[in-house]
Length: 182
Image 1 (tube, rainbow, N blue to C red):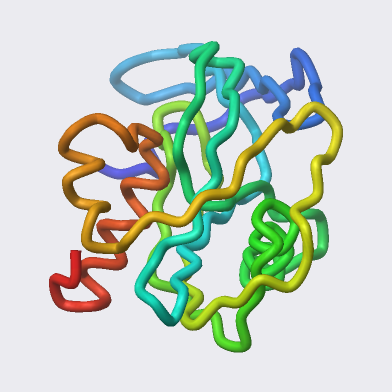
Image 2: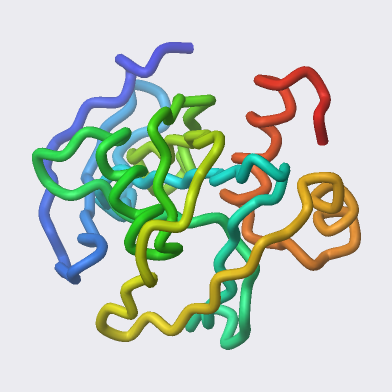
């Protein structure tokens, strides 16, 4: 099996939004024939685990329109055009939580949904974060910043209090990176 077996015959943008474009690909395979595939073209994303010196995670509770309910998650967002993921992580952490850190490290990256997306979500860890300013309430975002003891995170994931897949992914990377601190 080889990805080279699929040849793109034609691609066209069907719809554009501020956060993704819907692309239709006409692709040909020597055995499977010609098929249409639909892809959401989105920028890379980041999320970041801000950890205080007291071993508390700075998290954001916010309303998510997809589920029409609140989620509890780490700060995150899109990487702006021309911006590197680490810069985006630092920016999003400050914008969403008001916290900053001297040192940020990348702990992993995933394809959020490779069946229909080509982008990555990069996960970062910021240790010894400190409150620098009030969080920004931009546009339609409505958020509440809370701190959660790190020792509670595993139970909050297992108990369904934290359900955001990319936040859970970040904590999985954190656990690998830190040899089981969760």
